[in-house]
Length: 191
Figure (cartoon, one colour):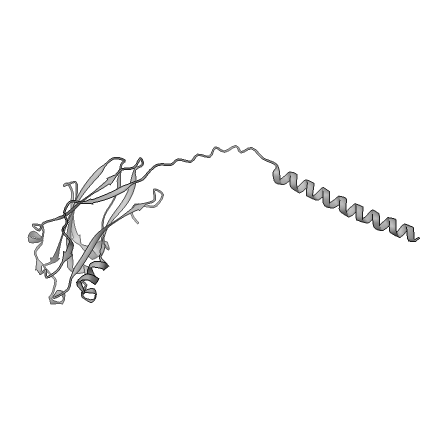
């Protein structure tokens, strides 16, 4: 009887060991099995290079400025720059005017920022269409567009204080800088 118990234990151990080996073999076979795909995958790459060149060293700022009419504001010297796509793919982009925090710190006027609702602007692309408005209405967005490879666009920006501004603008400053964001092609241009 004792011999039969030993044989049963040995048989059970061999059976369990055999089952484990079978499971490992089947798992390995399933894991390494390759199934051919029926879908073609493509990966397209292109080089996107946007560069901005400032045509003049004029700062984008309003200091000691007074309210003026649009007619007078449009006569001010513009801040000019170009955007060039040196890459191999078309680029969607957004041009924005943002606060230049470094200039505010340098000038010591962080607490004297001119409210954007008092700033008017004129923005032109390639000397063609001029957009005029109040900076706060666009949240600083000046242009959204697409630029083709090897294309260069030129821009000009004029800022002035709107004639309707009141005395709250006294001693207030605006220091800005141009910011260009590339926009993903699947992202809406209206963002």
